[in-house]
Length: 222
Ligand SMILES: O=C(CO)[C@@H](O)[C@H](O)COP(=O)(O)O
Ligand SMILES: [Fe+2]
Image (cartoon, rainbow, N blue to C red):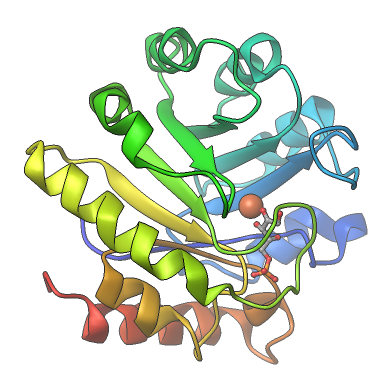
């Protein structure tokens, strides 16, 4: 599939969500951070806002659920029209069953890992997934500093995906900017979330294009 950029609207003007999304037409996806104030110490938005945005844009929505009990709530985001639904493995009770349910509802199934969660123990689950999200900050807030300590895990995840002959996308999320995106691409990431880097830029769409170019230039497989 190649390099994809999925801006997070967390630090956009949430009172004008549809207008903000209209400022980034070059994006491959729009990343929506759903937080419940339990799994993470922050509260953002839920299904009603998500459904409204799905009606207001033609860009596909990439739902990142930082919530407890994703087994119960995640399928509703697939039904609401999400192209991709990401649940956290630290919160899921039955990740394989949940991934299968998301796929059955027509969404891409994606599993997220916090920075301190290892990937090796989930090697056998990769075949059930369309994407793995590796957090490069502790989840909960935009605008945090990129954690270089996650780079070896990005490399290891790419190795596991390749060794199994899978087409699983590898997304990184947190502190991704023109300063850090090349490191992630070199390590094997191919889907890049960027929140503050995009929405604090004078021209957010030009920033999306710049990020894509930098990642493409640094990626080992073109
Ligand atoms: O999931 C999260 C935070 O928990 C992210 O999607 C951030 O919202 C990305 O924002 P930046 O780190 O790029 O500012
Ligand atoms: Fe996110």
